[in-house]
Length: 285
Image 1: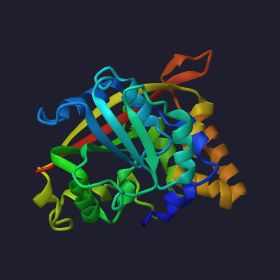
Image 2: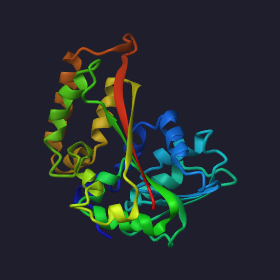
Image 3: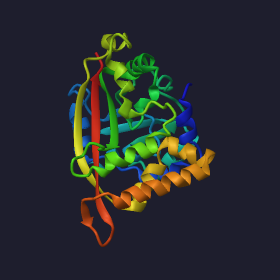
Image 4: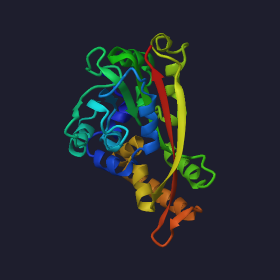
């Protein structure tokens, strides 16, 4: 099982509670869209494989959503980080009618039997499949039932928001520490759907369908800084160069103090944090 070194270090032991606290959940409209994308012939109750399940943020949102409350038979979470699996086990509570388990695995080695899943979903994770896109597609197709779907989901700050330009202004401060990791914004993951790079994909799946959802989170300076520290490469910086890490945090706070924000409650220090969710759906042939 091959896992990117930045993901291994940045999401290792000791980083997972911050990640779980700092990362936002998923909008009800996103979860409804995913439910509506499942073909009618894949009728509930559904078997779901969630790869890169992390601390269970997406899992908890799905289980709490009314469109999913009576639709799930079993969720098998696949997560390479032992620390994240431990946090998943602490925070995800299975309803009486749903079986849930978390296991070690990766995009190319899930440990799931052939043709078991109606849905394979990856929330905030698939960019870490780089560069094994074709092998990942082959694994997804192997574990899916015919006409089952793969859903790729990302919840990210909207750095191009016209209402809150400070988001884009802050990003260069911490992106310099990415250390060559295959972050979502680079679009490397799109090679999955390019037959010149990933020849297996078009033989296994229909063309992908992409949707975006824009929304706003109420946040504070403290919560925003914690969101920055939850990034894998910043967690590595905190371990390897404490002084540089502390300088970065002070720069983020300093720039944030200067930038004009869209206030929700200025006295309480609460302002708008624009987000964009990208959802890509691919149907198994």
